[in-house]
Amino acid sequence: MERLPFSLPAFAPGWVWLVGAGPGDPGLLTLLAAHALAHADVVVYDALVDPRILELARPGASLHFAGKRGGKPSPKQPDISQRLVRNARAGLRVLRLKGGDPFVFGRGGEEALALVAAGVPFRVVPGVTAGIGGLGYAGIPVTHRDTNHAVTFITGHGVTGDIPDGMDWPALARGAPVLVLYMALKHIARIAEQLIAAGRPANDAVAIVSHATTERQATVETTLGALRAGAPAGIEPPAVVAIGPVVALRGGLDWLGALRGRVLDPDPLALERHRDIV
Image 1: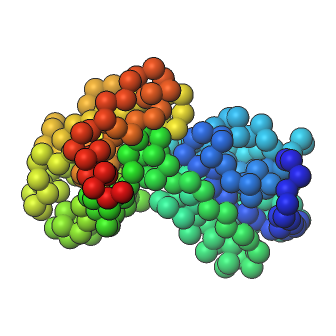
Image 2 (image 1 turned 180 degrees about the horizontal axis):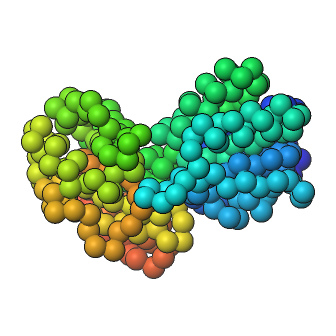
C-alpha cells in the first residue's frame, strides 16, 4: 500500500477483524480492508469475495473458505464462529472477510456476539453493501429528493431458507417509496404477491441487478406485477432487487452501460426535474 498521510490501526495478534469486502469489484475495498489483508495470519472468507481480493493477502497467510450459497452444502454458522475464536486464542491475526458489509444481512452481528461471549477482542470494518453500491453500478440511486426520502432494506432469505417469518407486509408495502431486497430471487414471486396484496401497486418499477459491480453484471427492468410469475429468464443470484420510482432514473444514469458501449438515453422528465432543482 502506498504511503498514507495518516496511520492505520495495528492488527494485533489474538484479534479478529470482521471486514466487509464490498459487493464484488476489488476497487471498492476500503483502505482498512486492504490493510487487514496485508497483515492477517488467517483469512476466513465468504463465497462472494472476488478471488482477486484474496491475492492481496499477506504471503504465507492461511486462507479458509467459509462460504454459504443457497441450496448447497455450507459450513454451519456456529462452526465458523468457533473457528474465529480458536484461531484468535492461538495468537493469530484473524480476518473474517465477508461480501458487502458484515452487518447488513451478513451474519456479522452473530459472529461478533460469539467473539464477545468468548472474550476475544475484535474490530468491525464496514464495507460497501450491495443495496447501495450494487445499485449505484446499475445507475440507480437508492435515494433522490424528487422521488423518496426513505428506503427500506429487506432480506428475502431467512434462517430456514424460506422467506423470514413475521414479516409485516402491509407496513413494508407502505413504509417507504423504495424497497431494496437482498437474497430474494428464489422467493421473488411470493414476495411480489405479498407486497401487491398488501397494497403495493402492481405497476411499480423494478430493477434486478445480478452479479453487481462485476464483469458479469446484468440488469433487467420489469414491474412488480410481472414478478408474480417469477424471476426473469437469464437472471441468476447473487442479485439485488430495487422496487420504486428510483428505477426510472436508470435511463439517464447508467454510466456502466455507457462504458460498455451503450449510449445513455436520458429520462427527459428526470432531467427537467433536475433543472428545476438547480
